[in-house]
Length: 382
Ligand SMILES: Cc1cc2nc3c(=O)[nH]c(=O)nc-3n(C[C@H](O)[C@H](O)[C@H](O)COP(=O)(O)OP(=O)(O)OC[C@H]3O[C@@H](n4cnc5c(N)ncnc54)[C@H](O)[C@@H]3O)c2cc1C
Image (cartoon, rainbow, N blue to C red; front, side, top):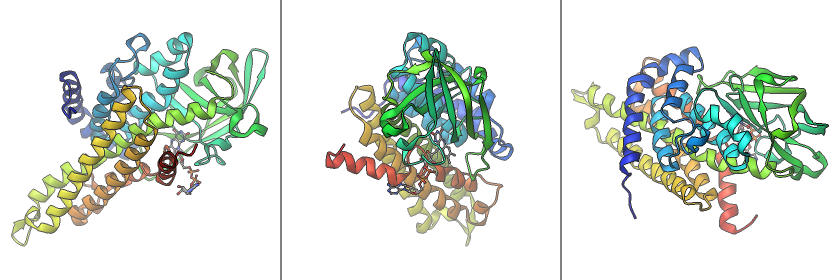
């Protein structure tokens, strides 16, 4: 067993860490305050190959492995959690279904510009009545001639307000339940009948847009079906398996940022004539954070390694996402505590980390749903 990165993996990690320290961390507070989409950062990350890390170079990606993706994603999220989720959606939620089920033409047209980082993609599964119950999708797709006619409203879609392309879960036969589902790839800038609806006001990840997507007799070319009819549910769930590694990394990166800031603050803040880092109560918080974050990182690397080796990683990605997000939330709460009153105010990033960490326990399957996925695997149920 080898716990060390390869030379190439270490090189990428160091390159991303430098970029994060120089160009992302310094603007993270401003992004949080203004809620603006970090387009310039996305384009630069694209140039560095980080919007399609494991996508082949033939389709605009970097052709690297998912272990490298984990290393890069943790670093990016250490700098800014909003940037982290945008990168995660492009790479996995959008990239994975295209990579796995797209034909050559679909990959050329719809994967290449996203993996190359020129534009954003998004993944539209959730609806008002279909959250944890993803098989309850009611967005309707009817094949009429050479077009799918799509009607429905998608809710809470990351990048939904800025993306050029979307993978979209729809149902052709609602009477068949989840077995009627299919996946379409939609060119959002050139689809009559599509519009962006409400953009959510949120608690955290404020530079990442979360939008409603409205389809009213929207016309999607017949050839934009991904894979086969009736396979949409499985395809979307597989996208989530991959996506959960990304969200676990987002959580782990937030936690690392908390630890980094807390260590520095604890050494500088003096009370009772001593730095607060000399108090055992503070030291134990730091030790717990470091230990749990290490464990989370190892779980994420294991899930990515399984994926790289073509092995089933559904349970391991659910475990890693659940554990990493719980660890990040604990770290964020303790981080605010270490900063005391300063942690509660906007002058320091501690309160932002706490707002950002929470979503990792909710999206791409709440942690209750992760436990269901894990238990189902343990019990051998389908
Ligand atoms: C900021 C943000 C970004 C998002 N981005 C995307 C995106 O890009 N694409 C997309 O498709 N979706 C996206 N989502 C949707 C997200 O994945 C869902 O919000 C999430 O899966 C939970 O669904 P829900 O909100 O409907 O909650 P519900 O499913 O209504 O759950 C409410 C509560 O009930 C619990 N619960 C539900 N069912 C069970 C059960 N069987 N057993 C035990 N507990 C249960 C849940 O764990 C939760 O605590 C995003 C959401 C947010 C807030």
